[in-house]
Length: 365
Image (spheres, rainbow, N blue to C red):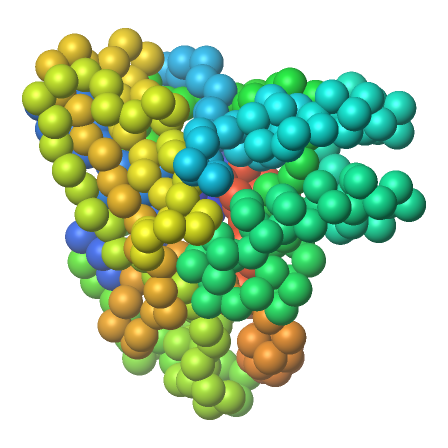
C-alpha cells in the first residue's frame, strides 16, 4: 500500500471495480509513511520529495491533499566546505582556484543552467574541464557511491549515475522539474484519503499466501482469475528459485533538538567523511511553516539488505539485472499478473514514476 498500489487501487475503484489490498506492514504509504511529533511532520524512512514534469501525475495527486510549493536544496561537505549539490558554478567557485576560467569555458559549450552527466564532462576535449570532471568524480561521486551502493560508480546501471547531474549555471535546486511541492498533511494522510472508497477493502498487517503454480495464481488457497497487481519483490513471489535479488537498505538515526533549525540546508551530503551518507532536517522539508522550538534530523547509513530488512534500493548491476530477467520470464505464464512499483520492476523509480505506472495500467481497464 505504497504510492503505486494505492494509486492503482483508487483508479480502479473509481471505475467500479472491487479492490482488495493486502499490506504486510501495519502502516500505509510504504516507505513514504510519515507521522507527527510535537507538531512536526517526520518521514520515518528518510526524506521523500515530490517532483515531476508529468502534468497528469500532478493533476491526479493534487486532489488528495493541500500542497505547498517546495524546492529541495542540498549541500555537500567537500574539502571542508559546504557546496551546492548537484555541483554547479557556485560549487566550482568554492573549490577551484581557476574557477573563472573554467566557468567561462563551460558557458561557451553548454546552455545556461543545463544539466549534464559526469560522463559528458569527462569526455570533453579541453584538458582543464576533464581535470574538473575528475575532481568532481573523486570528491563528490566516488566515495558517496561506494557508501550508498557498496559499488563503484562504474559498476552501477547508468540510469543511477545520471540521477545526480552537474549544473551549468548557478541554479542550486536539487531538482529542476516543473512541479515541485509537498503535501501539507503528509503522505500517510494523502493515501488514507485515496483509499477511502466504498469499493476498496484494505487489510493491513497481513502478508497473504500467494502461490504461482503451472500458470495458476492461488491467493490464500483460492484460484484467482481476476487481475492481480503485485508490488513486492519478484524473487519473493517465486520463492527465490534463482536466488535473491540484491537490495540496499538504510539504517536511520534520528535526533531531536529544542530549537527550530540545525542544518544549513534541508539535506547535507557527506561524500567522503563518516559512514553515513547524509543528514536531513524535516523542519525544512515537510513544513510550509517550520516549528520554532523543535526540530528533528535523520542520518542515513546505507548497507546491503539481509533477508529480514526493509528493501529500499534495487542494486541494479549486471548480475542482478540478469537474475531479475530470469524471474520476469516466469511471469509470462500468468497473464492476469501485473507488476508495478520499485520492488516488482526492480527499478529505482521516483514517486511520480510509480504513480504514472498506475495511471497507465488503470487506463487499460
